[in-house]
Image 1: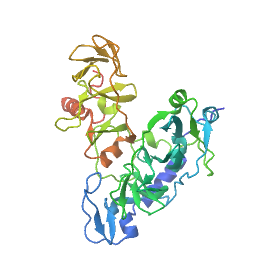
Image 2: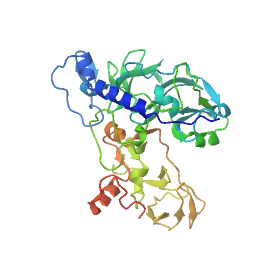
Image 3: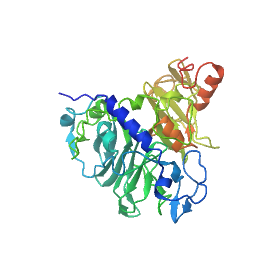
Image 4: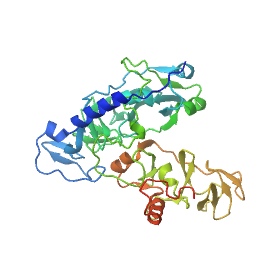
Amino acid sequence: MKKQLRQLMPVFVIIAVVVILAGARAYATGKFSQEGRWPDVEGGTYASPVTKGGVKYLVPPDELYENGLGKDGFPALNTPAFLSVAAADDVLDDTVNGISVVVDGQARFYSYQILNWHEVVNDHFGNKDLLISYSPFCGAAVVYERSLDGNTRTFGDAGFVYNDCAILYDGTTDTLWNQATGVAIVGNEAGKVLPRYHSTVMTWADWKKAYPNGQALSTDTGFTRDYRRHPYGGYETSSAIFFPVNKTQNRVGAKDPVKDYIVDGRHMGVSVALASFMEDLSVNSGEEGATRLAVFVDGTDVHLFESFLDVDSRPLTFTKTGNVITDKETGSTWNTKGEAIKGEYKGQKLTELTSDARYFMFAYVSEYPDAVLAGADAFDAAQAANPTKPAGTDLNVGE
């Protein structure tokens, strides 16, 4: 019988108290003496490393907080085992998300049920050495290539967080890396960046339909954990954030999921929460001559498309009236999958862009403070028109 995922509030409370109390101690005070004031940073990292005591930093070390569990408190999986879809289906809950990775036509699924307890899987998959990473504190689900400068690194949890996101170390140099961005933030390699590898967050129910011949990460990890239970109870759906962040937002919920896209060399965050406010569905990276894109909300998911067709190079401008999407140029009607279902362009399909990472909104804003947030202008306009409604509520959504 399928094992259902259950909440464990007593454990959540105990861990939360331990983590918050332990988190009062920061990396700077625990590891190095202060040498003058650390430069302030509002989200993200320094533009260039700051060197003190012979150590390079891309973030203020007094904003690196101990997570209360210590180094390798989230034990990395270095020899992961995998199950067939049929075998995994008896263990994994249909509604739980996981990270989907495809290498050379082979698909693997890394369930949050397991990643909540481990954060890191050092995997060799096809011809790729990959770091599959998930931070349950900040919702950052990102996959990186582990090979850098000709060497393959093995990563583990460093026992610290920055902006409530996990900090990793590599076993070769002991450099500290920001799990959310793949950037080395403390050590001689500060400033280096791990290449992302394409991944998608999906539910187990959707993934097993899409990849019936794929493999799923096994709960036979070599560690004693009850993978039926969530170690942080209702954290994902609460407004709680364990540790301080150095940039905040008050538009939508802190835990609303955000997909990250890289467009014209800039980060663009796309979320259902903000995109739902858009009537003009066009967006670009904010730069002159930037790529013009279209954002379509599809239930609990959101998609980013190129706003032109291969058969016609002219850009299209999409609008939404109620639940009907049309382009201003021809009046053709489109569905949320980017397919024209009526009008001059019937049968044509827009090209969808792919996202390689997903975050909670609070983490995305603090880790990528210069990112374009699709729908932010529409939200601000709705907020201004409804000043009595608190930020983050359903201002005019769908109206």
